Length: 177
Image (cartoon, rainbow, N blue to C red; front, side):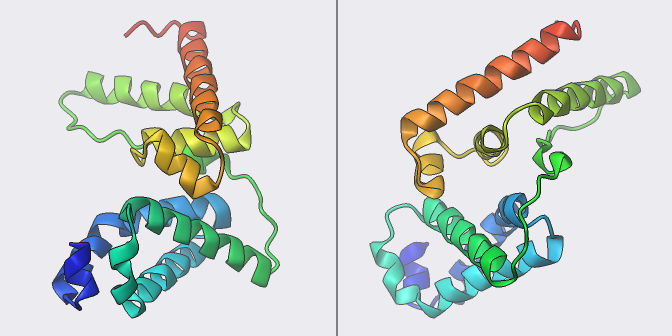
């Protein structure tokens, strides 16, 4: 796909855009806390990707490249627009995608989501972000480390903390599923 985009294949670029746009907007929202600014930041990144498409052949991991670009774009927006970074707890909700079968399943899923949100709410900001990137965006430790410009060991430690807190919250609330 990257080779096709580098040679100007618009359909390949549209495929890349469809594949990553929503996830990147959610990621940008972690920094910007504005749907409009997040969409603008991601659009700017894709615009730059298209404008510099010939250079894509040197990119080893397009996923990490896009996430890093969005992170840098979001930070740049914060600096340029003098926006104060503020924590918005509900941003960290994990998406649970599965068909709903019965009303009991729906209630159970909602209880699960609420407990998960409680667990995430008590995590430190960076730990929440790393957990969301890993569990929701399905990024591996190495990709997260590259995107956030931290060590892989730091990512591993933060995931362990997140899992421990999640398990603790579920046990405390009697969730034995």
